[in-house]
Length: 388
Length: 155
Image 1 (cartoon, each protein chain N blue to C red):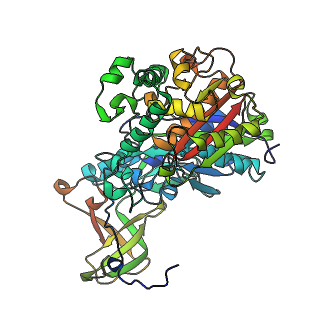
Image 2: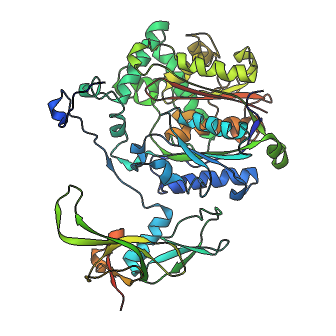
């Protein structure tokens, strides 16, 4: 037994993901939180603690964003914390919620993630330029796309992977998103479309990348006794893991995310999973870039190193394959409001395990799913294992 | 730990960086309506939670205490009361202001919340003082909190 109490997700909600939404960050947070509470059949007064996840303050353009978003997250007069581990925030936030309930301190926890990237104008890339070391890297004029290009190139080189195989991820996820009502960039595209799209920083091309977005997501966590009272379909948080690699991203080889493996092993140990590909029915690996889904499948030990492109080519990761990945449409199809995008993945596993994913529902009565996010400067892994 | 005392960072070897970021903030669902009412109708509105019987000023989309969506909007008039105030004499860089500026939290009878704004047309200010909003001429209003030019002593 890990923690004093077993913890379940009993409600989930997401807003639309769009390049520009009229709602303020507070209002987006409210919409997602209110929906999650309604699904759980709970009122705000039933919530004993609140955890908010949101990425750099520089996106919304409000310093102390956690405090700013508190009322929309339902935190008035409640124990409240904002957590932030870069792009890993969306999956890390329910992990922080988990320890609130697993510790026995609170019976319930409302977990909300929000991002309003459109405030940063003309483009949130401006906020990304100051995430680098101010002495060693910023004077070079670093930009976020470049460092992913460096990593993607290293991954391709190490395993001799073709861009065509990586492009299949973008094709799959954007197509999956056609069935997702929140999606921002759902489309039927081809590998050729990806390969012919604008080159941003070789090997990264326009259609390899998820967009920037506004949006929010929320889940309601409950202890076992409360969960069984309010629903017949609790989804259990059976594994949690998180890990950071060296703060010097230049120290790493970049072809493989060790830190994701470390976080996954922690979560699998807790969940008693010994053979991840056999025991996991579906996955939502973090896919802000198409190669990242492959990178993360390998880090999540869902296949051998360098094998993820092959599984993708063989259709294993399609919704009707043996190991569906990103049935939601992922970030490539749904959009990428950073923290909200990660939590959306957790919501998708929740709906899939409850058989409530509608047109996106994968066949075969799935029982175990894993969601993962990745962040900070290409070095943070957060992993959650959910079971029905 | 370096024990050398540096009073001017430019005297240490350094690189000068700049955190460049500009923003466009949407007013939001409640904000759109609130500022439209001020701009077009010259009215300051509040939003009432029927469940909690609380009227929020400025109006919000939802009640943070019970999470109901707020549908009932009410005109709260332009008169309020100084809840607390300060008189600023220097600016953010420490420069002396030409004329001291009064900043106050103004509360409105029977409502929750309030508006932070300047007070003008007076040399005296005190807690409990009744004030009223002075709006800019309608052709100068831009759907901003500065459409209220300032508050002045109420007649």
